[in-house]
Length: 236
Picture 1 (cartoon, one colour):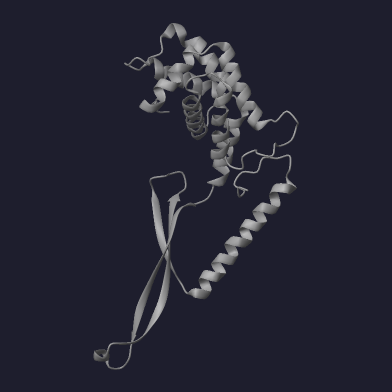
Picture 2: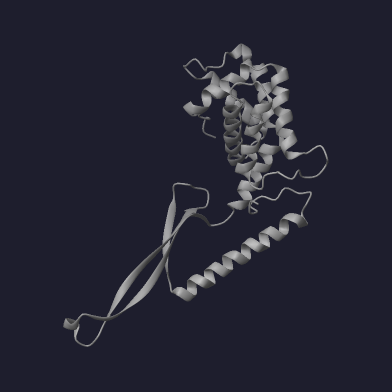
């Protein structure tokens, strides 16, 4: 297993966790747990429907606390947990790797060995929040396919129809739509491909109906599963 590398933008927020009091650490953990496990035993009306929205909701909780860089800390923890999920290791093992990486830094963010145990304990408390596990698992399931949608574009152009005598110019024009689909290959955001599909006006309507039907089906699942977070459902 390659040694863990901590990107520059995450080092300061990660290092700042060392200076958090135990009270602040448990306050952050409490905010995280409340997003995933509402006190009433069911989902709150504004519970987010996708992993990114959950993190956004947690970040908004910064208004309820005096922790200076809570947003940056949460972003860092969410990113690190996704890396942990990709490496298929326990949180405990991953925290050890983080500590090793932070001790190896040659900057102000370097972790003194004497503070390792305290830092590791705080990381374990935060990274064991269920919200991060749900986000990672949802992301894995939503991308467990050979090709993952990246971008789409429909190009529309006119193509001339010529008669027997080319010198007379085009006798008519035909409207052609080309659907361009870009996708990522499984397990990579850099390795991608693309393909093109020719469409006419009827095809556009058929494609529109298929998409609308899928949206309706997704919406009907939300009230059916009232007590279960539903990732990937349309936002209200």
